[in-house]
Length: 252
Image 1: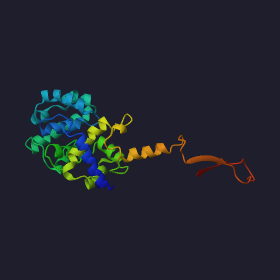
Image 2: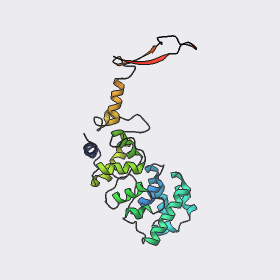
Image 3: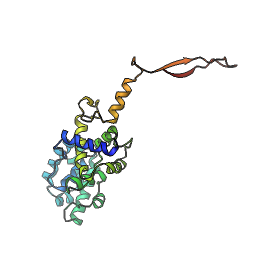
Image 4: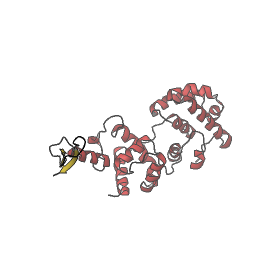
């Protein structure tokens, strides 16, 4: 099975497993998703969804948030962590939207990247969820799972993972595929606990699971092990010094 064939199979299985998967950040306007995705850095989506309620109650639109004192915004968003930098980026971003885009979020990827606090992950999320354009969002779940499954090989840098996935993921599937990886990473292929491989719809094609199963079968503790280690003495006593030990591997 080629990587592209595997990718299509993974897409289909995850679609059946999570038919209604979507963005887990609450928003009803594009600018609000920009704010939330900035707050979500090193913070859970669930906490962000709670914090933004207070933020929008006080600053209900782009103009209000653009004029808000950074210190006041920081007080509200502090529970999300990195409050000072996040507040600074949010206020600066809203100010640019107000002054250059009439309060609207641009639907151009490169224009999004120029906004304060917006990287490739955030820009892709906006392009896919707000504007319905091809997007691949390489968040931590995506990076971890595509490496485990074997769609990429030991690549952890987000942009490199994104570039590799563009080669094998149909453009129209990218956004939904990444959302489903988030759901699967939280429910089954967990990071902080042992993954629930026995309940995984991808178990039979997951590279990491297949390797783990193979390694367990041939573990040193197994009575079926084909590998044994022996200490082999040298054939001849060396002229000086203690007799060294030579470690050898014997297969049978």
